[in-house]
Length: 55
Image 1: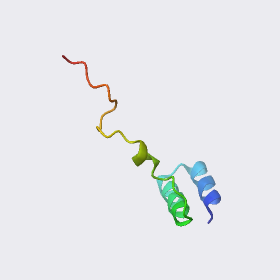
Image 2: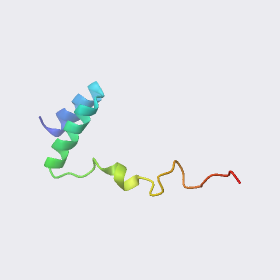
Image 3: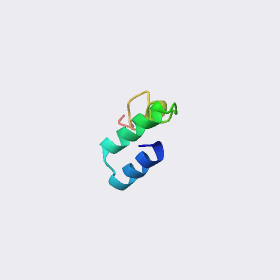
């Protein structure tokens, strides 16, 4: 299965397993992009960086 077919399969099923298969194929092809969550994750592990206004 090629990258495009794997992506199409995922968009049709919406299954996590199919997304992981797509990522595996994409990474084997030398592309980067399945780990964008790590690049954009909040380093403070909070929903926002504003903090809470409790006080």
